[in-house]
Length: 110
Length: 113
Image 1 (cartoon, rainbow over the protein chains, first blue to last red):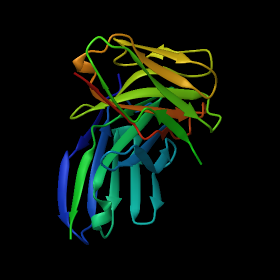
Image 2 (cartoon, each protein chain N blue to C red):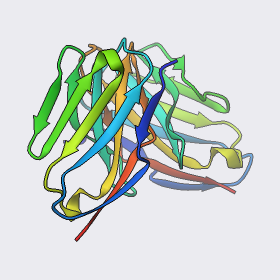
Image 3 (cartoon, rainbow over the protein chains, first blue to last red):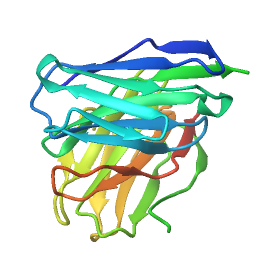
Image 4 (cartoon, rainbow over the protein chains, first blue to last red):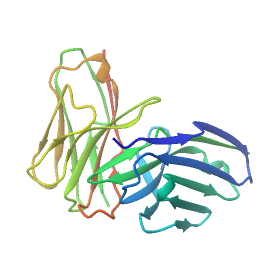
């Protein structure tokens, strides 16, 4: 069974810092990996989708990398802002199922 | 753009009562999912439907039933609610092809007392 782990569980940084969130998975036979953002009391919003054949994806200040062979992904957030405060979840697609990590709760301090 | 719509958003049930969570998507997706989210546990799959007319158990199916009414709608039923089913429930949908993303509803907050 695929298991997805995210470290750290919580992270607090001052505004303007660059930061990295980590995601690891146990089964490398994935179709894709996604990073999501979840605000309190809300659903999940997709940030970046990386196909299994890709190494990275970028959107604005966000950059996600994928090393499928080692079962790892990172989400890099540049020049963090208070509006980036949220929980970030990664998910991998294996077959027709999606497996989620427990998330990293990010707080950006003004 | 409606996307994935869930109802109700909030519900309080007494132990032993039954209820149905409704979900509809307007993106013509083949696959639909029901997850529950609990603190420290992440999102856990309850049931999913790969295509219209099929349903399969996920990681935590006990105490739940589902119906894929048509391509648009996928409902989740609690036949006899228990306090352990207090959770946030998310419906999601995805195109069948493997490279695609998954889209979530806003969630349904259920409390069983």
